[in-house]
Length: 165
Image (cartoon, rainbow, N blue to C red; front, side, top):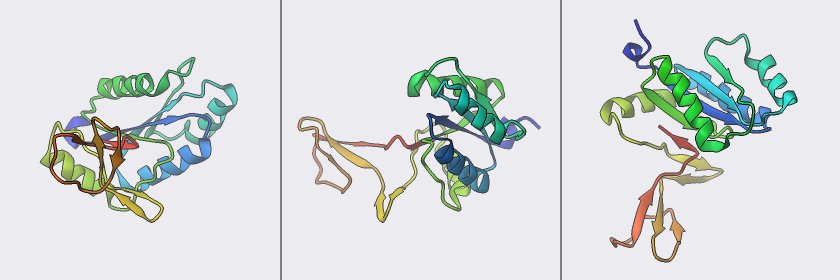
């Protein structure tokens, strides 16, 4: 059975000088989603590389990617997606390294991938005691709000980028 037939998810995490947060993120993924993790170290620093290697070198489901320099977010994600596609993945979850998935996230992502294939999705985000289900941006005033607003062509709905599937 190939990976795509198994509907596995490629989880992409970028590390930048924060092995502790990255480790918490990866542990939450491993508890909640059957996936393969593509971890890009954008630190491009020998000591950070050594920390990540010692944590994950023997873990089959974590693929370490060490570019020679900080590629930035977009190029780092593109590097990981390219590697994941080469391995047969068609479903992707991009996570900030300080994001932690809650129990049940894996089932919800699978349901969403099956119900809305090819759609960009973002989960509900919890910041402390605040729940965020998306944001609205006023295209003329540059205002951001996360409450539902009266209908108007000036307000655009957008997804937060800390977790995108």
